[in-house]
Each structure stands twice: as C-alpha cells, then as structure tokens.
Length: 280
Ligand code: AMP
Image (cartoon, rainbow, N blue to C red; front, top):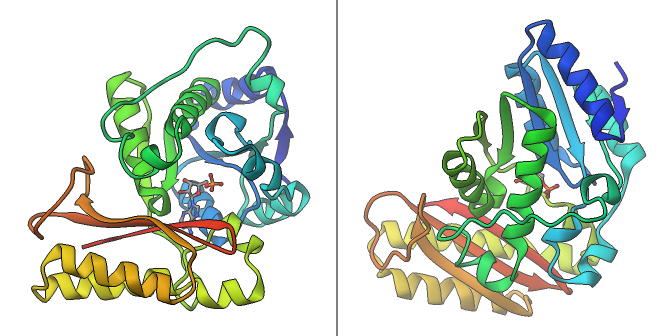
C-alpha cells in the first residue's frame, strides 16, 4: 500500500477526522526523514499498536542551532516513502516549513529541567525547537499514541515532561535503539562519515559498554568515565562534548551507581556529531 502524502495541515486534519469518526486509533511517528531501520522500527511498532499510522517527515529548522548542520541534513523523501510503503503506514505528513511556521508565528514551548544539561547545554535552543514542533505535531495529528526512539533519550524525557505538564492526551512510547552489526547506533548523520570515520565510529558505543561494565564491577564512576573518554579520543574522535552517568528519568548527575542510571555521550568524528546512550 502506498501511503498518502499530505502537505497541508488542512488535508491532515481531514484524514484524521475521517479515521476518528470511524473509531480508529491513530499513531504518529515524528521524524526528520532520511529514514533508516531505527525509524522503521518505530513505524512498525506504531503499525502493530494502532489502526492508523502517520509518519511525519519534517526537517525542523527550529531545532538546529547550527545553520550548516541544517543545510547538510540529508533529505531523501522518495526513498523514505518507498520504505514506509513496505511498512504499510497510512499517511506521510511532509509539510513545507511555511505550513508549520506561517507568517506571524510567535509561540515557543520550553521545557525546563530535564532539557537543560547534556544536549541542552551544547545545543542552545535545540529542545525548545523540539518541544515546540512536537506539541504542534500532536495538535495537528490528534494522535492517540506517539513513538520515539531511546536513541535520543533526553528528547524522550523532554517529550514525556511536555505531555504530562500540558495535559496533552497522548501516550508516549519509547522504542529501543537499533544498531548496526558493529554496535554503532543508527543515525541519519552516519552517512556523512568518511569510510575511515565510519570504521572508527563504533569506538564510542564500545567505550560506553566497557565503562558500564566497569562501573557494575565496582570501578568508581569518575574513573570509568575518564577511561571511556580517553578511549573515544584515542580511537580518533576529535572531541567529546559529554560522557556522563545520569539518573535515567530526571537526568540528574549520578556520582555513584545506585538505582537506574543512564550513560549518555556526544562526540564528534569527521565533523559529524554522534550521540548515544545505554542503561547502566
Ligand atoms: P530523527 O529523524 O533523527 O529526528 O529521529 C526520529 C525518531 O527516530 C526519534 O524518535 C529518534 O529517537 C528515532 N530514532 C533515530 N535513530 C534511531 C535508532 N537508531 N533506533 C531507534 N530509534 C531511532
């Protein structure tokens, strides 16, 4: 089945109204396109859980703090549509920027606390852009459930905070990170790595796995983190923005391994910024 491609909010609303009138549950998978198996795993989860599924493809200018990153972001809509046809989604909502941010647009949704450390500290304005577009997509689609990847763990926590705080009637489902056979977390940005960079990239998740094992084995957290950071740099990464153990839900600093922790990292290789996270 070929998904219907919708460009305007009006068309989207008309489709959803028909589905809801027929009593269907609606799932939404927000993406920025350049789809890979990680995105498709979310679409499959939505397909299994909901009667109607919308995948949104929108490279949201407001969540890019770096204009060059926005410019270079891969756009592969035709290929994306073919992949989503295989999953059997009902509709693709791929609006132009002016449909999402028309003249006079003046509202920003800002989640404090959980959005502030890590990505929030290194990408000023990023989570305001995410929270604003996600709140809009929820309002536009009126979906019953939304599917997000654990790959962007902090984003998942921000979105959960957003819907709880604004009483948005939607269930948020986190889905496990899909990885390449060598462990590298799938990301639309991976295709920007050189062959050499691609070969070095799995060092990030390997160092994180090793640090998690060392912490579980009793190595003090700061030592395990310092060791992982030097392994990542020794593997050829240019910079490590952060590599930290945090509490899984509130993302508060965690000095000692107690309760549910999350090891989160961002590092740059070949000018490509990679992020990853694992439970500890
Ligand atoms: P993006 O297009 O990068 O904004 O991602 C859209 C959605 O796909 C987000 O909820 C991401 O967390 C999720 N996602 C991206 N990469 C992966 C992955 N490797 N595994 C699982 N989910 C992912």
